[in-house]
Amino acid sequence: MPATEALTHGVYLVGVDAEGVRNLMTAAWVTQISSNALLLAVGRTHYTAELIRRCGHFSLSVLTGEHREIARRCGTVSGRRENKLAGLPLGSSADGDPVLDGAAAHFSCRVIETAEVLDHVLFCGEIVSSTHFGGTPMQYHPGDFF
Image 1: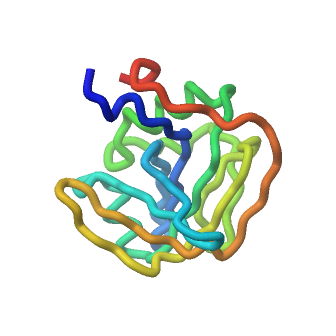
Image 2: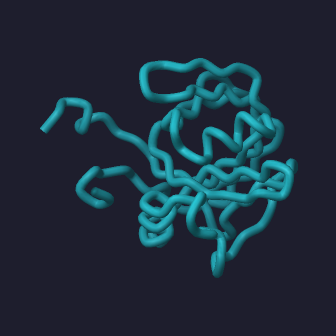
């Protein structure tokens, strides 16, 4: 087991609406970098990276333990081939990006910097709005998803 699997992460849904093309992606590589900014890492070839680059904004829904199946679905199915939003209880962020109803919190972010690092794109997002609803955030454990 690689030592990186000992690092702790939450589990999130990244939402994006790029000119009417909506998608959700499960992410664990998100961190707060200031009181009003988040850093999100997305695989360079992922559909979500393409859409965020196109529109310049994204949402983040902080998942709770009851969202495990949604996290699995949005983390294993490509939005290029299937509409992962179908049947999910969704709202919209300030920019129209999908957010999951019932999440512990929602964030709406505007991309202010991007960087390509190895096989990922880092999106630095300024938090333009956020709401905390409560609940215990889900923790990422690789065995739960892969």
